[in-house]
Image (cartoon, rainbow, N blue to C red):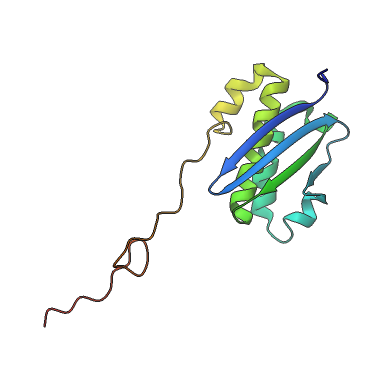
Length: 132
């Protein structure tokens, strides 16, 4: 038996992933049991990034967002939450697809950390070369 008033979206960025559930409410965002301001404390750019899909969708204050995020760091998790919220909004209202796509909210950011190569201290850094 599926609930019709529950919408889900999964977002990913770097090594982070976020599962978002939209339930009827008053626009409160809870990430891993903490309010948005407590989870991304002190960094306004991460809060702005998470709130970007809600600016596009007008009826966003009618739903609460319950988010579970794992992996990666704060920046990756903020991007994953943003991606997950956008996908949940798309599931709720498919007519918003053009607007969300135009704002590049539905596209998963493919950039990942480059792997370290053997014989080098880091991914691209080389040991000092000595001719003699």
